Length: 135
Image 1 (cartoon, helix red, strand yellow):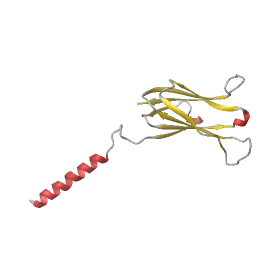
Image 2: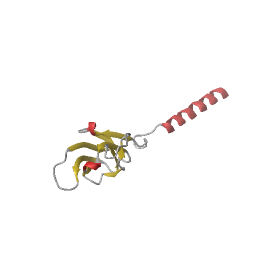
Image 3: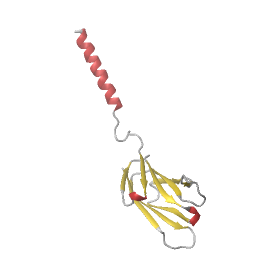
Image 4: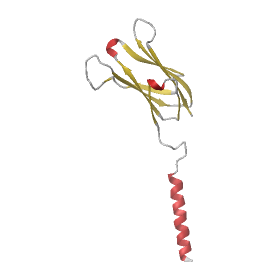
């Protein structure tokens, strides 16, 4: 009889531990989603708190920089990192600008990056677009 109780207790303890380690979708860890220009046109699913990292080639010495437009603008928080030159380290060379987008609220947001000069008008030379859906 004691052995049966001991086995039953061990089984119940094991089940309780297993149920505590299983995460519901709401409790799952924050995702880091990496995108680049080659992902243009893609729709990305995220949840509040997830971070989307967008890496785009840029050469600011030409006067062209990536400009971000989000519609609607309040569902995501956007920050960009400083320009990082490529490994060659040549002055005036190309590098990468990284944008970090943090999901704040549920909804669908159209994200457009335009490579353009900030002065003198003119059409963008490149566009990269994503749809970000937060559930």
